[in-house]
Length: 309
Ligand SMILES: Cc1cc2nc3c(=O)[nH]c(=O)nc-3n(C[C@H](O)[C@H](O)[C@H](O)COP(=O)(O)O)c2cc1C
Image 1 (tube, rainbow, N blue to C red):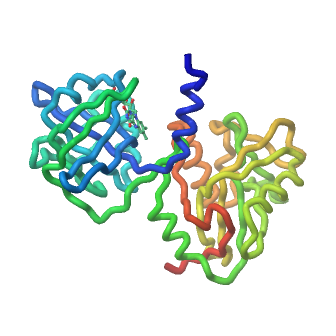
Image 2 (image 1 turned 180 degrees about the vertical axis):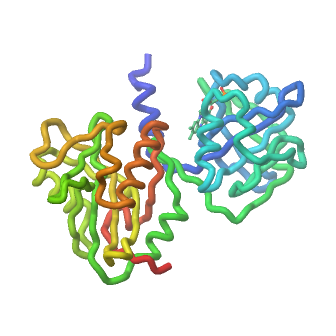
Image 3 (image 1 turned 90 degrees about the vertical axis):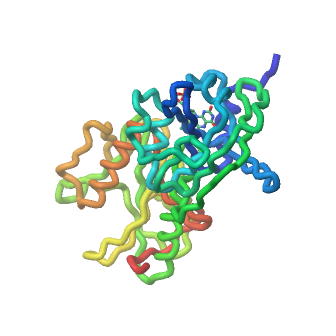
């Protein structure tokens, strides 16, 4: 008996940053089938080979392993919904995407970062999965950035790059947190009665740890700060905002109030940006997927941000 706990192992595998693909084929009746997979890897250039791992529990297991070929579609940053659709038991998954038959016959998607139309080279046993090895018969490399996936969340490296390129301007940085606990979010009430995300002015180069310390000081609760959630410039006030996702520890906050996501005071928020952020957060948390900006430095250090691009 192995002492490795599968759930914990899956979480640890999630530390590896990947892209997201949809693997497609045709069933015996010629109908398209497909599923979301991030277990894609390039294998060989000569001969041209790739691999993807398929769960034995997949409803498409027979079709996928017996098909003469399959295609791998590398999703682009705007195709998070496509990923979700092909990971859920949706009746007609292909209604969610523009697609056509590839040169070798498997469905290939439009607007993807790239696709590879393959013949099936071999199907290798891999425990509770099989490894589908495909020989690339045709491929197309688009211009779009790929959608990223890490620790159960999607991320958009291209957008992050944009945010990074906005860095370097003068001006005050306001760092805020969407600080959550058990499906509720901390908001603070301003003197005029409206609500805001907890927000603090940070100096150029200060790390998100400073944000956590300030928030811990105000709320009296432990706080951990996670990924960057939003970077934007408030032109009307000449302020640059960076908003992180955060987690609050147990206890009643000394300042601020916890609001359940279905009871957010959306008509009493300080500005429309805060409303946009909270609405997006509520939607994404319902789906269990958070979009985020990431950058090699942005996620570790605060940079000033302007609207210049
Ligand atoms: C980001 C992401 C990556 C996934 N990667 C894989 C994978 O590599 N292999 C796999 O078998 N399932 C993977 N899944 C799960 C399948 O997409 C999911 O179980 C799907 O419902 C299978 O559909 P099917 O049973 O119709 O084949 C992934 C899901 C998501 C959201």
